[in-house]
Image (cartoon, rainbow, N blue to C red; front, side):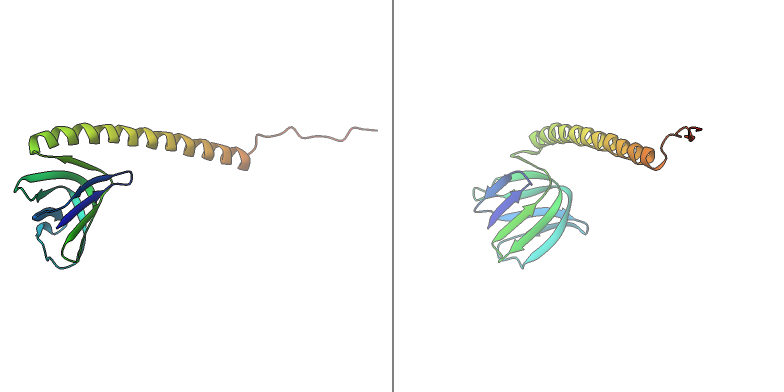
Length: 141
């Protein structure tokens, strides 16, 4: 079986000869083995486990996403963010540092968007309620 994990910016994982995949959706944990029926599900934030051809278990942390099984031999995961590791202890450290860095970038982007939104609202308000102009009188002749 083949396992492919993609994010918007990269192919995080493309592994052949996968013996099984384990993930988690809203209904709970589930497994996929070769010849599995076609499946489409929305993943929770979870650690996806798979066993490779050398019988070694490996891990990828995903920040939600969509998992699709096609033709019983291809498992595709599309996610916003993925961190791949060979052991859980190292994965935990990588996930914490990567997701913390990305959270800070998201918060900065949200703050910038909020400042822009406030500037637009102030501009619209000034347009709708211009400062009172002095009343012009006609000069007397």
